[in-house]
Image (cartoon, rainbow, N blue to C red; front, side, top):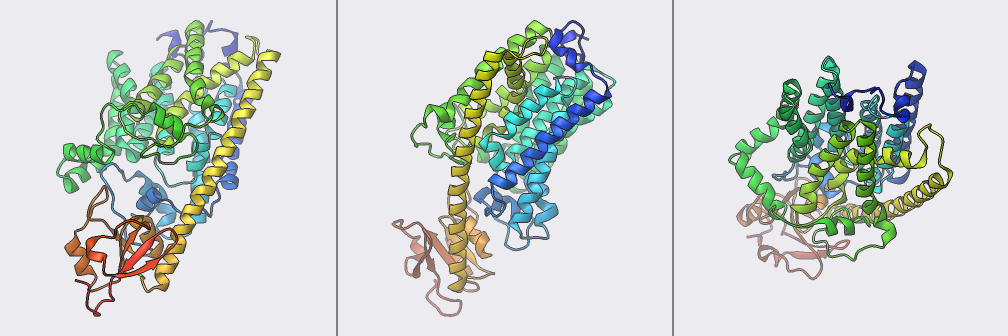
Length: 498
């Protein structure tokens, strides 16, 4: 067993002396982590507005288990982890506020638990600093109370990698083995492909070092979490290869695509930057993003010198592999894609900042500490500004969907009903209708089927102003909504629909 993998290494430097502590020290560390997690939950509830309506992707996930609207089309890249996550609330309540509060509390609890896994690998101050850094990113706060998979992949990654390092250091730590399995399972439930990218360095390390039990725990977790996705591939897509190909097509045909600049531009608060043709934001918005790899490299130097390389290099390697497809293989950007990478980077980055700001005896370096504090304060202010603008913009868009739905109900389009065209999935959910598309990434019906449906229930074709309506709907009655136009088929039995 090498020194770099022991939880409490001997001779690793005075700074790691804080790892050897009594019960009171561990209790104080737990209280510190609990405070960070509680603040994370509170900030979500204060800044992201629990009343903010469901977004497009959330609607797809929530509608799978809700009973107030038909299930939206579930495309190839998606997995069933989020519907399972929201089922305890969404299966019996349509309250968005209740769902937001549930997810905010659950994500705060998850942050506490996954940081706690790393006790003994990093000092409590580093763990708390990592929690603060990750939890105060605008993208983390924004998606904390949302029914989306990426943050939960991040939590699974922290759990899996932390337990992997603990199990590697102590082969008698059975709980760590179960943690490896649980973390891999959680990631695979949420996003199977991300789970593979995160665990790739772990699988390689387990094979090279012949840690067969660790490898078995990883493979078992990935298989248990991904089996439903694989079965669904054969049931609905003709096979695993076909589903992967379809998922690649929907995501713009995965291949060499330099998306680093797209991700940088999306940091201004663009939830989906596709195509990412917005201007590059000012340096104040993305400076932290460029500093991250520098701090990660410094953390690695510190770890090598202190003889505790594994606990730093392993999360860095996993962060690099999970970020790779979103930086180099996809032709667009969404900030949430990099949440697992940010979570894994948070620990080495916090360690580097602590090392910069304090002497080996734990006393602060006044000048450096002041610079770090000022830079951190500026970073937090900018994260808040981006978050506030993103929440305002997102809330307004979802209010428009709700208003359009209310107008459609007034026009007689009520459940059971069908909506097609632009924004059909979200507007249909708010209206209580099913949604359909004859082309594009969400194609699930045909023109003939839509025309047959007009004979039995209300049908509307949505389009943006100035866009040409579908040929089959051009003679339908036109109405203007909030940012949309709708053509409503003649009422069933009135004739003229076909």
